[in-house]
Length: 281
Image (tube, rainbow, N blue to C red; front, side, top):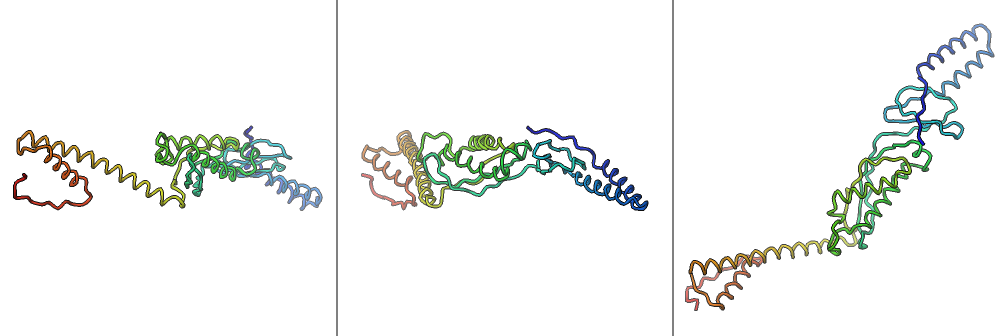
């Protein structure tokens, strides 16, 4: 588990180093060559313990293979010169993944990409529980994308009972993605601040076919609305003619009128009217 290491002030040891240099100079001047050389070696060795920890940065300390703690407080510090220091950034980072080809719930190949904001929360896990935590984030995010795509269809064209799809799922799909990525990255001490899909499309080999299918569906839906509106307009026209007694129509003429009105209202081209100046009979 991660533990904080209380490092000593680097400024205090700078003063100690300066005092040592003064003693060394005095030793050389006084002819005490060997003691001065020994003290110089000690001063040089102690200088290896100086370290600077910037804001939102940490230093993981290892002594002969043993974890001794992490410095998270920014500043100028001095630690045991035998410590091996591993600097780990605690800043938030963006991962904008390249779209990858995956299969959705019903097997359609789709291209999906995500954008994620993450940061290191536990430096012990990030340093020791995985080999390379940055590479680990990339690989596990891709694995989470593949699993997410397998949970939902791209849309509900083939699965009409699907309440949630990748295309229309919105926040629910993003929440599932964030939950999946969080679980996978917990082993590396990574905190996932946000994860969401930023690219979604059919794979190139089926994109044109699916586009035609979407267009056909849209045309059918539009025609349905047109026919529905046309029936209402014809019904209203017949009722108005009957109520206001403008003209008396038998069943055959009503059928002819309904047919003509439906052709005019549902046609995709403008109608060309023909004026009849004779008797309708």
